[in-house]
Image (cartoon, rainbow, N blue to C red; front, side, top):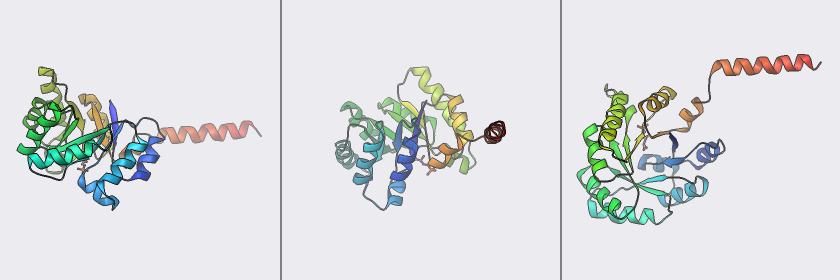
Length: 214
Ligand code: E4P
């Protein structure tokens, strides 16, 4: 299972990169806006830190403009993956990128049928937003299970990239569901380390060691 960091903030990416298990980064227009910098500058800097798939999302909403914008983003670095919204134009542009050997991440997926369309057009990744489904009273994790089963039924190679992850239980449940990737904010990645018994146990070991050395 790959772990991606879901942020455009360079200091967060530098911090997580030191842990050694970050496989890639996802961004979206909201995350880029939070940085106050241009997407081009942010993506270029991320590519210097993480040697893995870096998702950069198009702003255009029409197929031809998406293709032009995405092709320019792909020129920034070999690791750039073009993120496209799950619309008629986005799915159509996805096919163009697949046919031209440019990797894609189809985003804003909220149903298994949407995921099926992305797979049929050769998307590299599909991003089901499980937290946003939970927010509206639907079961986000159920969607991950459904997409996994459908892709396995037909041997689709599109990777299930669980997105909109809000806490560490989401990460564990995505792993149990067989998601290929989980993208998460730094806060959630930090939660993965934590267990109170680890802290209590370490404090006890250090205290006993200090006593024995007196
Ligand atoms: C993933 O690609 C998205 O950028 C992200 O996971 C959305 O998360 P949110 O619902 O917390 O904004």
